[in-house]
Figure 1: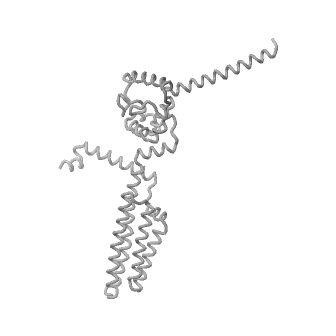
Figure 2: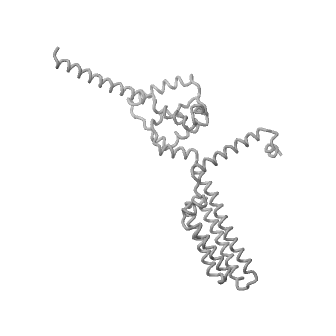
Figure 3: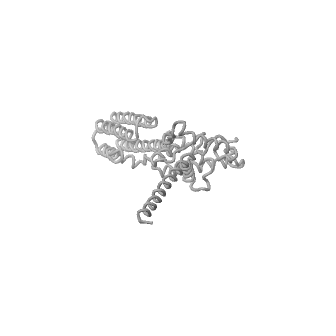
Length: 309
């Protein structure tokens, strides 16, 4: 047996091994695709992640939450199935077997008899979800943007009320200091009229923000413009004196301190809640709801008795 013959055998075995390995890999890939192994594994991983462990991953609320995520158009668009008769024939056979065996298996919590693991009679799911799409979908499903908007609206209301109170205190202090001085009577009346118009303007700005007609930055900028107009009117209408000069200085300081920039006003007023604040508030809401349910179940509780009367 010469060397070239042995070399031919070795090379043949190597190529045979490579071909069989590639064939086995392709068969495994085909089986995984037909049986949706990766998609099912991804779905189960998301359930475990949201549940905080395998113990609670089969709870109805977790499964329903993941069903909502998979129903989001962003996730739906990721799931692309092969089209055509020959491409779908093996998958249809798999679906038929699954439909026959599904009545024999226990129904998952939060699903009906007709629902698959992907929910809502879905036959397949994505085997990969990009991180940005998953984060966006999860936030939309949990309604975090809406929750953040409502919290921001509440804080902007408080921010506006605090600024009005500060300006009002400056005017009240000035009025007490110049009481009895006739030269301030007409001008002070005009200032209070301008103050009422500024207050109405701020209320309109807040309303526009509540109706999503303006962004937070735009609302802050408009509030600053309204206060600027009031300060300018104050400077023009009020006669110059020690007390009026001091009041004007306070008004300008208030304007500069809180509204030197939109970012500064948002930061000082805490107008843009972060994710941590939203989560803490959501936990408080959940705790309050659970506590209320327990009190309503207890007929001896004060809450139950108050509602019964």
